Length: 170
Image (cartoon, rainbow, N blue to C red):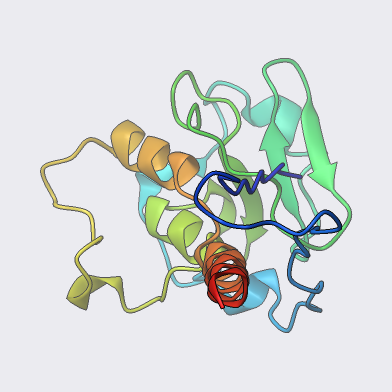
């Protein structure tokens, strides 16, 4: 969960005494993790394999291909809600918090690009100004995805703010 704070400057806008900002209505999700996770990825740097650090602790826990897991320093957390857990800026720095999934090819971390898709950015990032340059380290890409916000939600909140300001200025 995230907390969003919206404020209006009462010196700039004439706020009625009973003014209360209404956040956008909750929207039901229409996509699943399978709409975002690319099961064809086979980059070995993303996978946890026999003999690697943490693999023995993961292999018996990360078994459900329909959920997302997180390595939380000393334990693995399964997100049973069917959605991606909160992405954080410290993903990839020290091996914890990066979402982990069980694919047909094994247990692996999300790619930074998949993290962006979970933040609501379009899958066709290569034509967008926010695509990752190839010279940026993986850990920094994860950090950028974790520092971003869920774009469709911010868009909806911003529309509500704009509509409120227009109404107040009338």
